[in-house]
Amino acid sequence: MKIAIISDIHGNSEALKATLKDIEKRQVDKIICLGDTIAKGVHPKECLSLIRKKCEIVLQGNCDVYFSIEHQNIDEMDELKQKRIKWNKSLINKEDREYLLSLPFSYEFYMSGSLVRLFHATPTANDIAIANVDKIETKYQMFLPSENTQSQNIADVVIYGHIHHPYMDKIYNKTIINVGSVGNSFEVIRNKNKDSDVLETTKSNYLMIEGEYGSREYSSDISFQFIKVPYDIDKELEDENLNIEKENYRFELKQGMYRDMAKINENFKKLGIDVDKI
Ligand SMILES: [Mn+2]
Picture (tube, protein in one colour):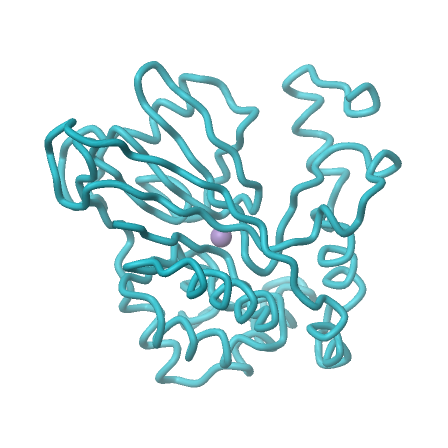
């Protein structure tokens, strides 16, 4: 069985349409979404309706929750936060918000003998960023169950989103995979002066997993494939005037970098990595 796993569409309908087209071309059996369908981009409605139509399982991301709940103390927040909440909420309706709040936190299945567990960010919280550069001890925690997971078994494979940066690593005998982001890829988290190929850094990313679905026997292979899909970024940006943070959003789509590089670089410094030397 072939399962396509997508995540972090963030209201980018051009990226989602191109990705779904690519998935359909490869004749998959199921599509699963790891959350954050909305927020940031100007087309959350269109993305939501496509996701609801095409995905068998949809998990809940932090933005799905954040822009769907009632904020009690909104007047006490700083101006940008208030604007962000009001604007992102204005693009979806009550029914959309109820749908997003009803989504499950985590999902798991056996494939070719491995327990594969999926969630948006971590097994305990959907807004904590665990990155490829984090310590092995931190990454090991990702395999442990929580009150949010379907079973209390330790997973063999974990697949998540949230950081918008695809990678795969082995932690002892376990496999950790980030599927990257469909609509808001951050593939460049280093030195912006050295990012030469813009086209190469702004594609949609998703994962294909293939194996014996539901089987607890190590009798057949399991495989993981990272797929990059180009999409029409300029078309997606045609409506950018609707976006209250259009400069930041354009920068992210065009450069494949997070808007606040200073914050990212600060994190690298804490790990003893000099970004200028990468
Ligand atoms: Mn997220």
